[in-house]
Length: 83
Image (cartoon, rainbow, N blue to C red; front, side, top):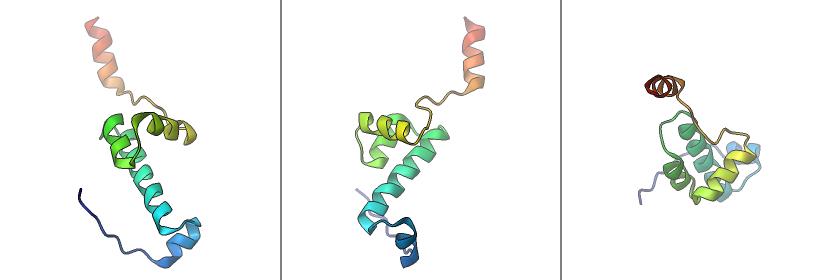
C-alpha cells in the first residue's frame, strides 16, 4: 500500500474536533464519496478507498444522504432507446 503524507495546520484538527487518526478516516471517506458521486470510481473501489467493506460504505452513503446509485442520464436514455 502506498503512504501519502500531508502537512496540515494544527488548526484543521481543532476545527473538526477530531484527533489525527479520526481525521484521516474522515478524509478517506469524504474522498471516496466525492469520487463515487462524480462517477469516477465504483462502489467497490470507493469502499476500498474509505477503508470499509461495501455494506459499511453503503451505510455511510445513507448517513451522508448521498444517492447510492449514480445514474448517467445520457447512458440511461441510450439504453431506453435500444429497448
